[in-house]
Each structure stands twice: as structure tokens, then as C-alpha cells.
Amino acid sequence: MHCPYCNNDDTKVVDTAHDARGGVRRRRECKSCGQRFTSYERAILATPMLVKSDGTREEFDREKLIRGIRIACAKRPVSAADIDRLVGEIEAALQNMGKPEVPSRVVGDMVVNGLKEMDQIAYIRYAIVYLRLDDLRAVRNEIDRLLG
Image (cartoon, rainbow, N blue to C red; front, side, top):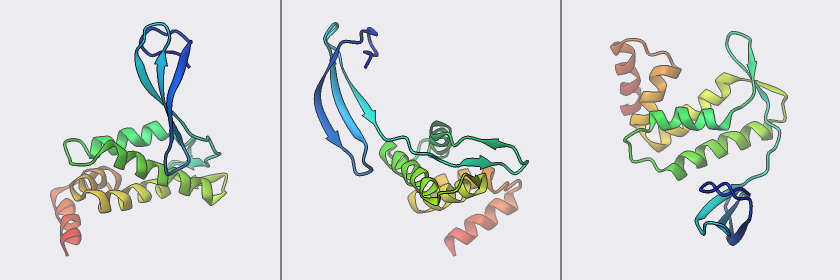
């Protein structure tokens, strides 16, 4: 493991903890500069290819999904841990499907459902793009559905 501060590869593990999803968090210390940092390990299981609406295919990208959800949750009381949990649940659900390909819409639906439970403002922000709510009437109808 390379130190993110000085790029030295001589580090030692100070503490190890396991998270609920089977990942491992390691607290490390660089033997060269003395800085401490945290690394995360998780098993990489096969996720299906995502088939987009135009027929193109792309690999599931965990970081891309996190970025999209973070944008929807900007300046909202949603913790990074909540976002990571949602993304982990989505990734695990995709892996458990056991299919080589799934429509990208499946991922979008999972995000929408997760955000609806997590934070309704973040849900509306995401839904505006995902559901293509392109005018105020459509946005209002979606808000009315939430409130009803």
C-alpha cells in the first residue's frame, strides 16, 4: 500500500475493522513520513453489464453511481455513509441477479427507490433528470405523488 502523502510503499497496519457488508477498513501509518491514513478493502464480484436505452453497453461503475447520488444529495442532511450503503445495496442486488446484462433502468429504479426513502428532496433532484421531468407541471405532479 502506497502512502498517499509521500508515495512510499512501506506502511504498517495500525488497526483493522470489518464493516457490515463484508468489507475491511484498515488504519495505516507510513513508516517514512509518519502520516496516518485509512484504506478500504472489499471483494470485487462480477457485476452485469448495463444495457443503456440506446442499446450500448457499459460496465457498472460504482464511482459514477456515487457521483450521481452525491450531486442529488448536495447540501442535504445525507451522510457519505448513507450514500455508500445505498450504492453497496445496489451493487449487491446487481451481483445477486446472476445475469450477464441488465437494463440500466434497473439501476436507476433502485436509486430512485433508495433516495425516496432517504431524502425526498434528493429524490426529486435525481428524478428530474432520471424521469425526464422537463417542465414544472411534471415536477409538481411528482411532488404531489410524494405528498399524497
